[in-house]
Length: 251
View 1: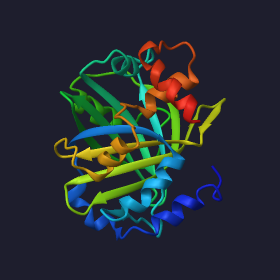
View 2: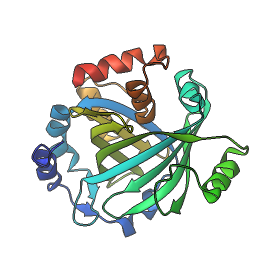
View 3: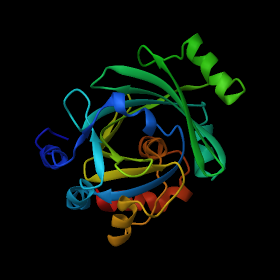
View 4: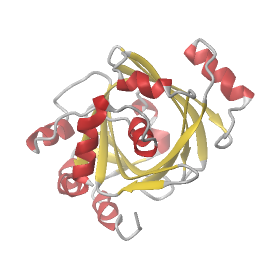
């Protein structure tokens, strides 16, 4: 998405009071409940002025709309993807994420277990086409077993991170989704993925109420899984067909 197309979101983000990285320790929520929503950019732009009354916006290096690039890993036969597709309650996601403005890379492991998301991470130096010995050691310690992993795809997006002024709650809003392999790049410019991160699930959140008002229901969405089926037509995706149709409609 061009800088020109992001102008509206950047303009609306100026309505938000800023919060900075050194103030975020109390809002990390590494053990949390996530609720995801899929919506259009036009709906996002309609509700941002209302959200500005109740949330701060994270500002990094002078911007409230930060760029992210993520490298995903899976087994050779996509076991992590299939665990998600098949609805397995105990599942993992392994990625390296670059926080572009700050130039920081983290190797991150997300575990979904009994409805909660637990994230563990370590700082590393760069993306890794082949996982380093240190990265493999960290992954094995978290997964509690040795798993052969390989690079599958890159994902880029722009993110605004909103922090509730009254509750222990964060809201990440991702737009300008793009997926790439060595041979292909696919963009979804009108799709927005919002993720409400709470210590305990509550419908009292202003964002949740605005979603209900706009008849947008919670919709579990994995950026990795969607990228996997977008770039690999051999993967089964029966259980993701409804989500794929929604994305296609919005885009």
